[in-house]
Image (cartoon, rainbow over all chains, first blue to last red; front, side, top):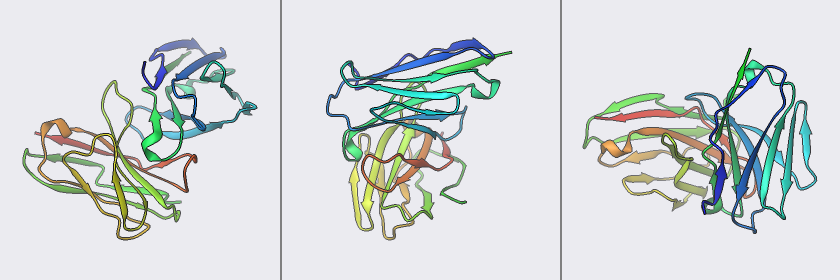
Amino acid sequence: RKEVEQDPGPFNVPEGATVAFNCTYSNSASQSFFWYRQDCRKEPKLLMSVYSSGNEDGRFTAQLNRASQYISLLIRDSKLSDSATYLCVVNWGGYQKVTFGTGTKLQVIP
Amino acid sequence: NAGVTQTPKFQVLKTGQSMTLQCAQDMNHEYMSWYRQDPGMGLRLIHYSVGAGITDQGEVPNGYNVSRSTTEDFPLRLLSAAPSQTSVYFCASRTKDNQPQHFGDGTRLSIL
């Protein structure tokens, strides 16, 4: 089993739709979790950290389920500008213990 | 707001040539790292540093060297370029363990 797994997609959704991505991880000792957004041929940019209690930033909601070992990202009222690849990152200590998922591609269509 | 600055943005090399990818950050972050990103694969760690004078190998260190003489700079050296090193290279920095990383805008490297 891969350390971090994401559905590569693409997820094609109409503007205004709600879409959710999951990311599963294998190491139960994982300590911190993040969602990054990466536009085509650009650098990853931090979208949000994922906290145990769940957290929300505008149209974006992140959840952590430690029992089932996954994190999720929910995007409400999708915009064309949300089209990108979303990477999950799992960290259980030092640099050697940071793993990036391969990303889920989202395409929001008019 | 400079953040993490990488140079050059693009580079084409011939097999066997050497070069240095530059990375500088102005956020006074102790931790810096180099990743490569290839199609269909996640970011893979090449080398990292937890402070000036301290470096260590990541997942794919072969063919690359690093040094960290100052907090700000973390150059990556390709010793003898090979086509397998064709990739997009990202430098990143962060304050400490379990904190998110901040990425430079990447160097797109092609080895012919």
